[in-house]
Image (cartoon, rainbow, N blue to C red; front, top):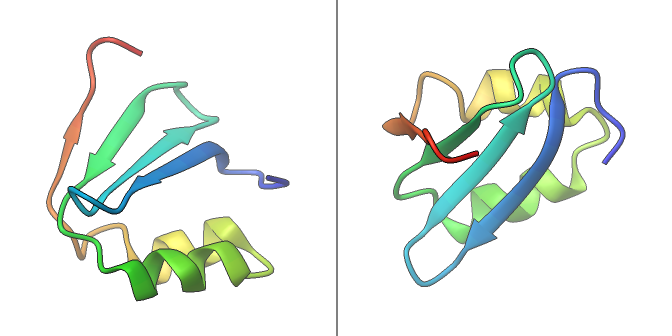
Length: 68
């Protein structure tokens, strides 16, 4: 995943949780109730960071993982 902001991402369709690992602090953020269509559009986006900032960050509730 070439991005200046996002190290990696994972989506769990059963819980609709999008997990994002940011390059800036290497922590995992779990965004809740993300529709599968939003994740599919994220995967297709040329700029993952730009899509994340415009369509995911500040639009979905998240929690920061302490484990990763």
